[in-house]
Image (cartoon, rainbow, N blue to C red; front, side, top):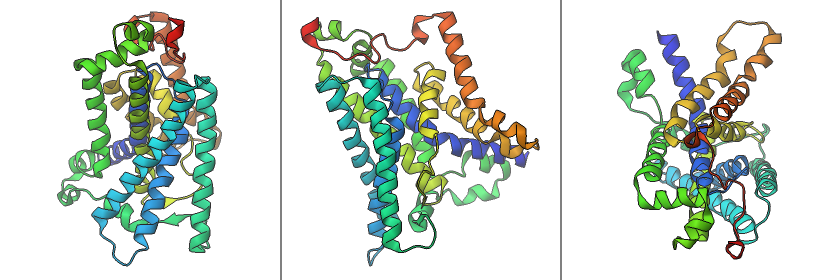
Length: 325
């Protein structure tokens, strides 16, 4: 039982950055914007938090709570600026969303690696990573009684605050999209921006806000991976393909933030499953393909069933120009 609880614990930890990214992308896509720059924004959010924390940890006085706050604010600012770049190019200039998103991902990975490498050089470290362990410990702090509760404590209370924040944001996004008037307006824009515009809804404002908020939520996923999951360790290209998995979860969760919660944890479990099975080396690449195979199967099922509520927003990926109404 303890082994199962530990595996689920690791799956939740692995799935949390995916949940941040998927929630942010769902909010963005509900406005009709297809932001394939989410992996790059997660990189930028992570390195922005690392930069802010790096300079604060090297100051004469270090307070863990302030270190966490600086990391969060730096991450949100970096993610916001990256999202604004995407918004300006795709909404204001009406550039192709697919090309812009891919370019932003390439830029974000390069941005993170450049500044990460620069910080490593500043420290004159003999190892290719930056260790912000004091802030990392503050991020991963959990309720002290969890360790004495066995598997129950491992499953429910042994996480840092960002694990619970990811779930709360997904639930909040689901409530916002279903139960509030601005959420209804946002969904209307994603389905038919011309009709929404004719009804007096400011399409440009909603697209900007949704894309920026979605990008900031996704950026928190990058920060979580570095500060909590990795214990405050930054290494170039250490984030892997998690940003793309977050986009895949959007399809698997059929554009519903509430379904993104179990989907993210399932993908987290599939991502680490090969570590817990005794299999020949030749089988490991097949297991590592499982998250993507599951996504393809989910895409096939949703396409075959053709239920409108399980389909993406009708105007997803299309730029809107009101003079074309």
